[in-house]
Image 1 (cartoon, rainbow, N blue to C red):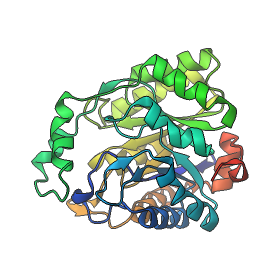
Image 2: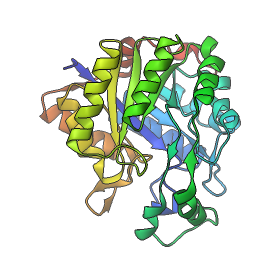
Image 3: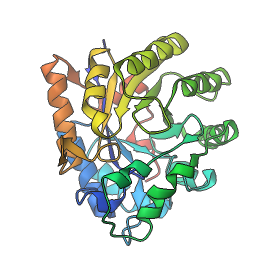
Length: 308
């Protein structure tokens, strides 16, 4: 079991539409404030997407990221992690640009193409503020999130000279084997962060046996070369995180992954979820890592080496 547990907070993203929660940060100021709040609550890493403030639509325009990244960096010591996932509706070239141009300490990278089903949210939510939101959910029953071997290699090779490390996102067991393939090719170098994703329609389920299977497989493939972290989608968030912690793993929470603070209750902030999981960690007798401890664990290049 690690001496310190790293908490990542996924502040905003493309999974949830803005209308589904009034607490989801959308504007650059809201995203910056939310990230700083998560850091103050105990997050060592913040995982960041950007949105167009006019309608809340996901965007990978690097200039939009530039509107909030310096504010976060100047007001906290948190490790900044920029998405290369963007949204399933974007091209890989579009998704790459923020990480390529801004050279963060960490960027996320998905390890495989998959069905990406969000349409079941329509059973729980009917009132939309923006025209794009309902079709975005409804059409996800025919949507593939494309991440081919060529796409993955393209992102890794393009960022190779930036010294950016990756949050390797694995939505199923086969994604672990894909990560191992790129380790063998020398494009992913230890120590690396494997982020196992549970409970998203199209990926592995959130059952305790699924979580253990992911960990056993990753241990067999990567040995001591990696750090394991988990995120549970929606209502799975906290109990999957708690299971990871007692198994020696790290955790990710945040409004990108779940809008909920409890059964039937929306979380009012990202910081609320960070505080909740940190409290669970402390009740289990575990300590949480500071940003600088996370930098040491992952051998990151340091916040003075980024391009924002």
